[in-house]
Image (cartoon, rainbow, N blue to C red; front, side, top):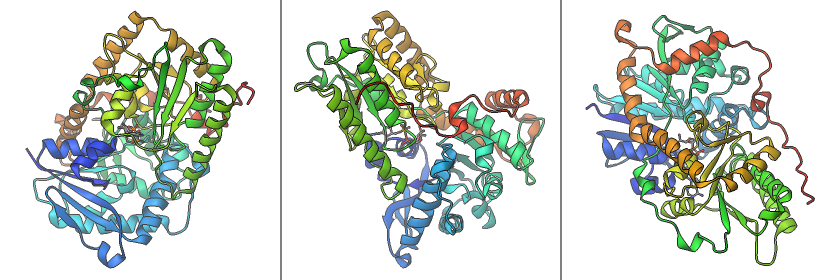
Length: 492
Ligand code: ADQ
């Protein structure tokens, strides 16, 4: 088995990674189960001289960032430009001079520190939007190994992507990879659409993309969870409230893409329209802070605190607070117990690459008495989890109605939906995600004989969609740009 060299923005101690969730859990799983090396940022910011030296601890090699790099590359281009643009939020993107140059510089520096560690037989797997130029920089240094790239966040509609002043340079960077993996077929379709319209890429008869004299394979690999981590969960007795009180759970980083204000408004609307459920339901929202140095993140915190205060003030009683809003991370073991103790999960991002919380919630349920997943149609997970109750998070009234339907769902239907959802989650788990990407990468090398290559199903379907697509105004509301959530009718 070849060694896998993983490159991601953050590298963490394996125990901490298991607690962190998301990308870190996935990569820690690979490091534990395969011959591997994990390379990336240590999370530290140090003076430039000290930031130049990598540290190796077992299979992990980490590099600090200098203050300028942290400001312009990490907080700047990665999180104030690429993150909002890829989530279709051009309105909050900050196109500042010098950010892109620093982004390229950091990728160049990381490539120069990584290159001496690469062996001829290694397979290199680069993760996420922070590191799109890494393969170009490695190729410049003579690295001929197979290199794959996986994007954990969505790929936006092509009209949004071309608003990036540097979109063509980024496309050139992508062309240096042998395989680009995305979460969903919709993302594949968006990327192919962009490559065709934005940089004149063409699809070859074997399904690969020819652009800038390179052949690139693009396919979807929906990320999954380690199911066994969640199925052993037990209810947290302290959280199972008496007298028929039912809990709705939300667990999201405090990010403007996660649709938290819309979720609170929908819950407020539910209480307004369904007085019979007052004092019987609580919404527990766990929302740990992230990227607090980026301006757009400070606003969302204030907005949520105001909304929670207003809804609690309007409907709350001395012995009942409708929204429990917790602004910090929960230990992972406790999180699974909270999932299992909750009758409903309200997972309503405005845009999300996948959303692992949706899968974690389902896997944590008691199959004999499972809860109900309410899932945004704009989470990548909605492509697979069709048996969830799918909502449009912009539609506050309809979401409120679905909350009522979920509370009233009979046991037989809850069990049937849970069985169907578990079948999907077990089939496309974390191991399958990793194995299928690495299998595809081993087939996708640019030197591979195209006659032996089979076109992935995801690319065939995306191409069909592309040939049918007419570039008129899209029906997906997020593709029309962000809209203000309608004002709900509750009187606060
Ligand atoms: P995220 O945007 O971080 O990940 P998500 O997929 O939901 O979103 O993963 C979050 C992880 O963090 C989950 O494993 C969850 O359990 C954990 N977590 C969240 N809040 C927590 C809390 N309060 N306490 C403890 N743990 C918490 C990015 C993309 C997603 C994509 C993942 C993986 O934005 O779309 O699904 O990468 O590819």
